[in-house]
Length: 72
Image (tube, rainbow, N blue to C red; front, side, top):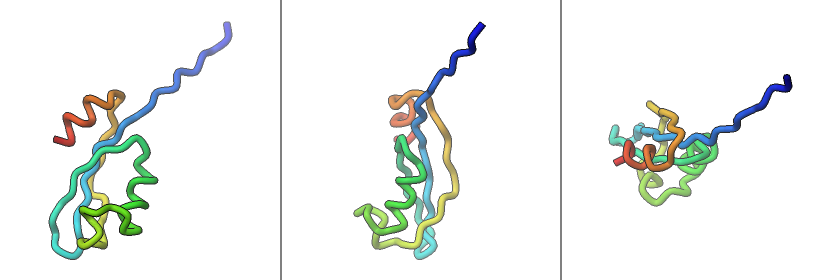
């Protein structure tokens, strides 16, 4: 019997902490690596003045609605 692969898309809730002012930023995305790189490059209006940022927490959700709810 052939095996089937189930591809699940994940949505990530993450917390960044500013090394400049110790404040935290919470966000969600479907591509965590890309989003963290965007923050580090200063492409996010909310975190740009607070760089550098470090990732201190993330979790994966299988539902975008759940990830948005957790972000809030």
